[in-house]
Image 1 (spheres, rainbow, N blue to C red):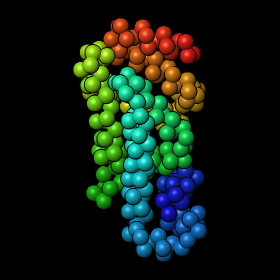
Image 2: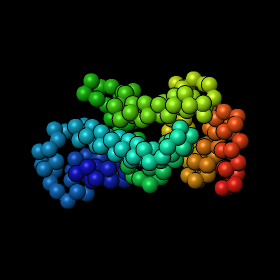
Image 3: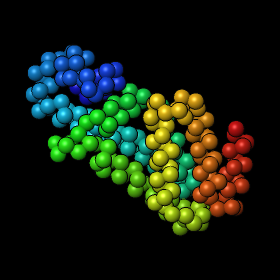
Length: 201
């Protein structure tokens, strides 16, 4: 049911994604969906939670494989962007729900704080704090830098954005990482990092 809902959102969008359309793609009856979920909104809420949880788990798993704040920051950026690239239908489904659905209290989802999103924010902030504590990162506002990084990742997530149309994912990851190295790394680490980027490029 979840996969069928994601497929439906990707193909026809939130507005047209009725339970009957989802049931059709799942090869089941609408009544069976209604047995498990009280309404379309209830189903979409569960789909949203699954999408967020799956992406968070995938990103955190990649971060835990590396050591060092610079390496973890690079991995956070790459894993976040590559997850979007590998799962375009999930990305579309997520955007459809966030920008079209509302809570039972009639609050748009894009105005709500999400536990999974908060987990990724905390993960990124911890990486930045650790980098400063270990003397790898220069002094800066962790809150502001977190917003900058998440904003850059989120911009590419919008499939109709100009940057997503004009720049491929590998180039975007490389350029964003290089820009952030110049911004966050201390001078002694900055030269080494940029040298490595140039050698690999």
